[in-house]
Length: 496
Image 1 (tube, rainbow, N blue to C red):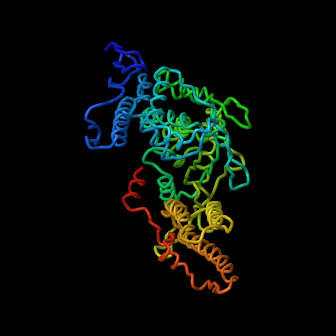
Image 2 (cartoon, rainbow, N blue to C red):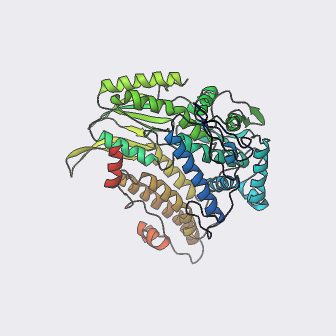
Image 3 (cartoon, one colour):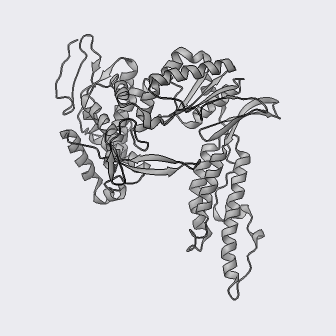
């Protein structure tokens, strides 16, 4: 076939067919602002604009994924005009809004944009992208405390940049998803930390008692820009898309009023950063899957990964191979945080994705299983959050305990939903007790104040058992919410 170019790439809908021996292939021509009866991927005429935008964006993603899956060597060069499509920008805005988040260096918040008009905001972004005059702003540097006392640096892009990053992610993610390996679970569609933990549980339960517990030193700050763009360009040859990604990598960080240009790395906090991280580490996944899988099972979640091995010798060999692969990626393992762990009854465990995993013998089935429950760090974190929400100063102006409970419930529910597929009953009970103690303490303080007044009645702790908070005031109770993964889920992970 001969290549036929019907429109300027990235400016109008492009129609490109494959040239003889070429891998630079575009997408079928479609209007850049789809209109019509709205019947796309399940969105009928009665669907809302949000539903129609979602359906059209999903249909675009489906077509891109199928095309990439069909031809692993295909390079896409007609993608930029998809990024500024009105339905893609609308869907990108909805996702950014759902994720919430703070303002960037321009101090423009989500609520400000909603007050000024989302339609005008997206139209302006579309015009900048279409004209090729969009330029990202530096990200705003913030620090969040880590449990070990150190601080984790985050980069907060401006809202406008988050929307464009999300639109780009919507378009290019399906292409790379077609290549990603099953051992990768972090920040991927239809995959979760629970899926990764289940694979580890099943593998460890089969007697694979040797674990490479690995940590990449400063991963997000160490990503080599040139090497990353080389990996991206293996699938994408659209120069405007590559320019967008390069601009984000080089946008820099503003801290204390000074902009520092990044020589390497991608800021944690950026919408596009997790996808770029997965693209960068796909070489590790692919090398392991094709060359070293006999040594053990790799389970990776973003830059955190473990390898579950049968023997100590396999674990040693696995660690050496990982070191060699990461060297090619210009990365290094953290010497103090990377270790070989031997599981087994009475032996140590390891922490992964907030869970502590250890071999435990079931007294009912008289077998050994790899159990997991919230780690010490996770328990400390939930206690700190509960303590803050139930503090006397924070709640000084409140007269109704249900207001405090209304703030506690989303925290408890979210934390519990993450850990409820493990063996966390004891930890859940401990958190329930702590919540009860804090609420009673808060009521006792108020009761003491009332009792100090003429006619006040003394506060009695026995009048406030835990079940009263649950039954009368709607407190979310963790104990009793454990949901072990079903046999269908376990069978699927076993098959993988």
